[in-house]
Length: 109
Image 1 (cartoon, rainbow, N blue to C red):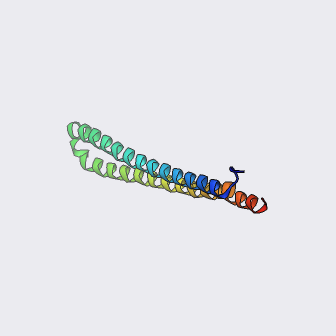
Image 2: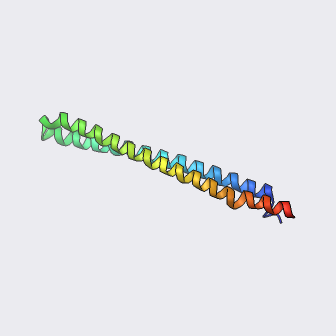
Image 3: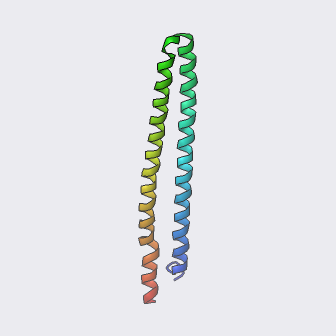
């Protein structure tokens, strides 16, 4: 009956909670760094390309890159919030799967 004790299910519940939290945190950190380095890559590539070949387009390129960077940043934020939605969904799911049934079983044992 150790598997169905409330203490064990509570430990399992909090372990899944913290693991999902750290996964979401590192996922967001990875997305943000990936967006930032992608912006730097595109920025230096277009800076080199347009400065040496089409110098009079440089001003428009800079605004295009800013727009592209904020678009990527918005995409990473939306992915992060969708991941947070799944995080709270799984939190709710884990609470029903582990914690509440064990309390129910413990009350009848």
